[in-house]
Length: 60
Image 1: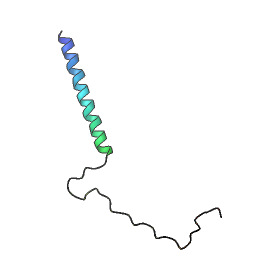
Image 2 (image 1 turned 135 degrees about the vertical axis):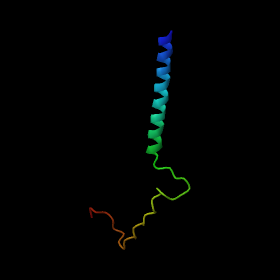
Image 3 (image 1 turned 135 degrees about the horizontal axis):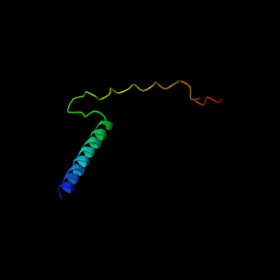
Image 4 (image 1 turned 90 degrees about the vertical axis):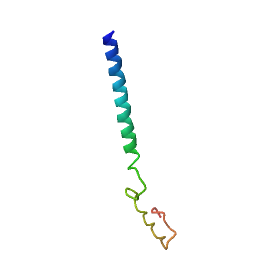
């Protein structure tokens, strides 16, 4: 009886630890959390200027 309680407790502990580890990985995969500041938010990138030529096919 004591063995089944110990195994059940170990299983629950492993399940909770696994869920916490997966939750941490998911949170890190989403990128850094923004907490009201602009830290971690990339600056907008400049768009290239349009070229004077409309011929953009490299095979011509």
